[in-house]
Image (cartoon, rainbow, N blue to C red):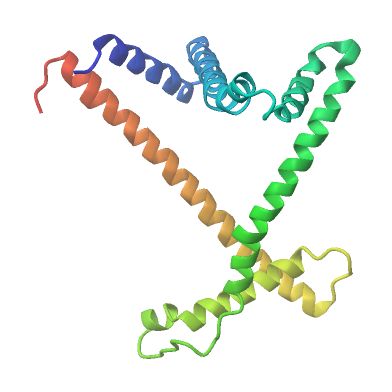
Amino acid sequence: MTDPIGTWLAALLTLAVLSFLYRDNPVFRTAESLFAGVSLGYYVGIVLDQTLRPNLIEPLATDFAKNNDLLIAGVLGALLYMRYVPRVGWVARYGLAVYVAYYIGVEFTRKIHGEVLPQMGRTIQPLDQGWSFQSVWAFLNSPGLLALMAIVGTYSVLIYFFFSREQGPVTQRVSRVGIWFLMVSFGAAFGFTVMGRVALLIGRINFLIYDWIYPTFGVVT
């Protein structure tokens, strides 16, 4: 059974956010601030309950001798908040430096195994597979053609971003091909983003109609 108060509150906040389609107004800014505050408070609660408590506080409280190395992570994390104290704000740089170095090291490995190596493997596919000229659709879906497009796209984009050497007549033409691949990639990413936002809008409109307007006016579907 749905909560009528919660449904009305969600509907009014949805309309307050949608009011930005007309222009910026106090109602929209109120809903925006409320959303930011609630999201931040929820995130802080999640971090305290699912990160700090099980990974730092409870191990130190239950077996301090075995887990005393966690104090280093706790102190480095606490140093980040020293920037709010102007006289010792420079201490926060130590915690921030360790955090950035650790994050770059972890993300570097993930990027290599998750993106770079699969992309390299995609460009090393054999070209003599699946070529078919029986129909246009079969030709466009042949694995060999897709592998050829991956090779041309990857290397032309790499040449476009190769700035350490002046480009000659040949490399300029290849880099322009790379620009076309980039535009197609950006267009696909933008279209995917727009589709996601439209899906969210459809979800909110369905909520307003089926969960708020119809029950309010007693419409039976």
